[in-house]
Length: 202
Image (cartoon, rainbow, N blue to C red; front, side, top):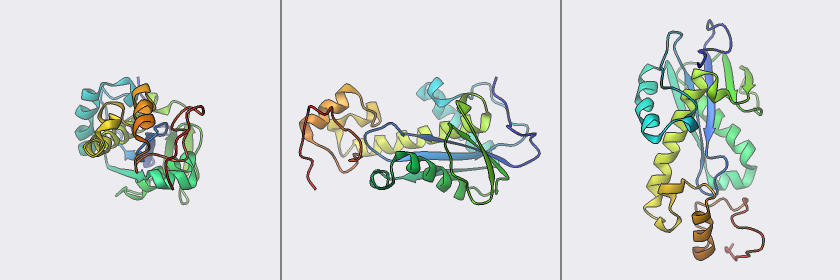
C-alpha cells in the first residue's frame, strides 16, 4: 500500500523520479508531481511494476488530478558532459522548475540528490514503491521518455528503440556493432564490450 506523504501532508510535497538512467541512447527524463491530500488510486505503483498499458492509463489521471506536475529532460550530449548522476539530478531540477505550485518539501527516489533552491528534501530508496507522488513521477517520466524513444525510432529503426527504449539489450548492442553509434547514443557510456573496438568518429 503506497503512502500519500513523507511528512504530515500539511506542506506542499513534490515527488521526483527519473527514467532512462541506465540506457545507452536517448535523454534521461525526470518528473515532479504534487498530489492533493485526498489522492488515491489502487493501480498506482512503481512504474517498473506496471504494464505499458497500465502506465498509459495512469498518465492522464495523474495529469488531471495532480495539483502540479512537470517533466524535465537532459540530452545525451549533456549526459556526456556532466555524467549520468548529475544529469539525472538536473532533469529532476528542470521538472521542479516546471511546477505551477512551489513545493515546500521534495521526496526523491534513490539515495542521491542535490538541494533544489532553498527547499528541503529527502531521498527514499525504492521510494517509487512507497510514496504515491514518487510513483506518479515515475509513471510520467517513463511514459514521456518512451514516447520520445518511439519517435526517434522512426529515424533509426536499426537500433530497435521502439522495443528496447535505448537499454543495453543484446539486440541493441549488436546493432551498434553493425551500424556504429547514432547521434542519440551516449558516447561516455560503454556502448560495447571492451573486446569490440569501433571507431565512432569525432
